[in-house]
Length: 407
Ligand SMILES: Nc1ncnc2c1ncn2[C@@H]1O[C@H](COP(=O)(O)OP(=O)(O)OP(=O)(O)O)[C@@H](O)[C@H]1O
Image (tube, rainbow, N blue to C red; front, side, top):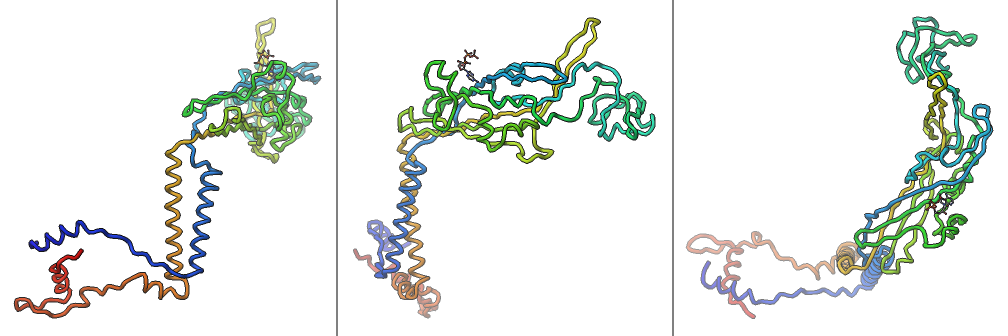
């Protein structure tokens, strides 16, 4: 590079470059621009700042503990069990009071089961037989109750099933159509929930510091958020089901506790919100309902074991806690204002598109905005330098380089 070129480069370093604006006196595009600007401003203020609280730092990693306790008793009188009183220890499983608890609502009771031989129940394909060889000795019945003894027993007029070695007698298949513990509808559950937002070191519980007698008598309602004693029947009805029909086959109910806390306001304004939903299939089908089996074991005077087996149908309650806390912080405020202003730029870009390409006079505005600079190769002129032809563009460039820079 020559000395003059270096000098030109050096002087251009001190030039000040400013943008040139084209003011389009077009009312339609002008109005459109203001409308776009106003909409973006409304979005920024209304949605980003007022609704979504874009000026707040948030904490969604809620820490929570749940303790539950049920209360209520029910009296039943059945042929298998006689007169019986059921209290919490009988119908709540597990008894510890966790965030998932099961309340027994219906039962198939099979008392006095002893180890011995008896016919397998009907309706199990693997246990159907015509002759003894269909029941190989020692083979377990698939989805059945015991192992085959090698004998085929004709118990009915036509049906025959394999004899099995099992806890006999085998359980009856049908569950009562009137739920045995339908009175569980009136039981109450006490839900103790403590939460913490670690980012803001903020803790709260769903119980107000009142005397114990209040807890004994109060019941949760939509107006009383701080009574954590819930009537089971009401929980099921708020979840959109009917307790007595759900109690026959059982099911799953979700209790959601939501804590949305604006920590720019006093802590007393941060409340729990409860919602209830049925989580298993509402329609009666193979996939709906919930049941399991358990037994209570005894030993008679001769030292032989026997048991009472229960097939328990019931409602499982799953308590889930979610939450979000927010508090003013300058960083998200600046980020949201910045992205809002950048969006304003997108508005101008959109109006440029309309002005330059979509309206009738777009050609006119395009000519004003863009200056055509002819391609250097097209403008080539044969100028001889040292006997060699030289293009106009090269010539021009040389001239530009050689021109003294003006202020
Ligand atoms: N499911 C419930 N329905 C109605 N009241 C309840 C229920 N669970 C607990 N309570 C009452 O709430 C209060 C606080 O219960 P907490 O378990 O902390 O105390 P407690 O003295 O161990 O209760 P309790 O001995 O009565 O089970 C007690 O007065 C208790 O009787």
